[in-house]
Length: 333
Ligand code: GTR
Image (cartoon, rainbow, N blue to C red; front, side):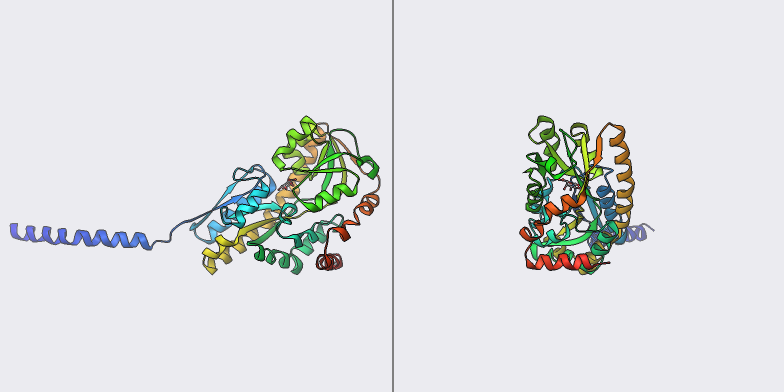
């Protein structure tokens, strides 16, 4: 009996390392988790963040939790321009940005954000979600990015600390903050005002201390940045619809399998519906909030006057190829 027990023990002892070995091999074969970072300069709850989070959720779902996208809001990783630079050299995997600063990296994009280009939001979405939009997403590859999806960003108007703007003459000499974009500088100059390019996060104090007189943005940003607290005059001229985009680093994407690249692209495209819905809701809430807070809001007297003042930008800021794209965009029904 003793002998039998001893041999059982011996066999068990001999087998133990094999099992251990087997377990280890099993663990090594399990798919490794991939963690990717996404930078956004807007705060939690803002519609672009709602979109980013939906994108992250879908990537998690389609990869069965194998790929995790971490969303970093409020410029925690970098301000908008540096986030784009870091995505270009692979330091950050994704960023959601306005195409204004992105056009410094891919100038073709200016054709998508010219003043008074789109008849309305429906026209813009037909362009962006059609062949033209896809061409521009694909054009990001030659600059080291992968263009994934467009997000809504409404229309931009001017606001300032001094007075309501009714006519182009009212803009004369006003110091207006713009995004880091040659086109936006030109646009403000075309109105006789003085453009000051500046990172988004610095605008509040620049308005407060009088370094600038005003800025321009959409309803949700005017609200969430608290600019409405210091720049009480909002004059609705809706000079541009500037789409936003999630871009991926080409360096990151090239390291992934074709299947993983495809699921990331699919997740990004599908997140758009949630972002657009969040945009519409937030826009209404922001308008109600800033009105209740005492912002003085007016419409400019004549949009055609503003459009005429900005019309020369279609010559001075665009090359022949971009002008051809503008013609194609205008022809979209
Ligand atoms: C917002 C946009 C930001 C940033 C900002 C700005 O509408 O969502 O990404 O571009 O405008 O004016 O800097």
